[in-house]
Length: 110
Image (cartoon, rainbow, N blue to C red):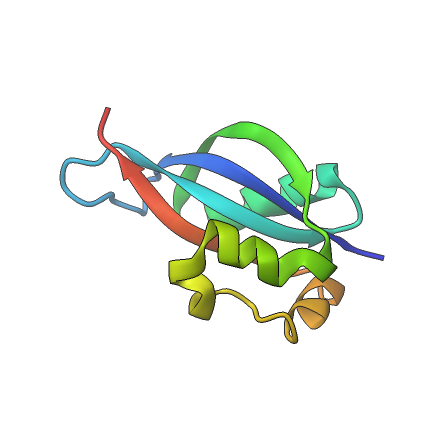
């Protein structure tokens, strides 16, 4: 049975992906449904690379997000993006299907 894992990736522009002017890369929260955290990391890195970014690093480790606290988690972490994230009702199917999704990309210049 899959669990939901969250980690923040540092990404850089890849050969087929340019960053907006003045930005050298971005940090992005990655959410992955997988059997364990190692599988989650692998799937998340593959997904970001398929989008054309170059994976650079993981910031602050990997954590499991309990499904029953998803609504509270979104309200505390990404309230302004709640409508762009899976709803509490959608989340069980997302996890069962082993999907990968991302939070907002936060660019950096230095």
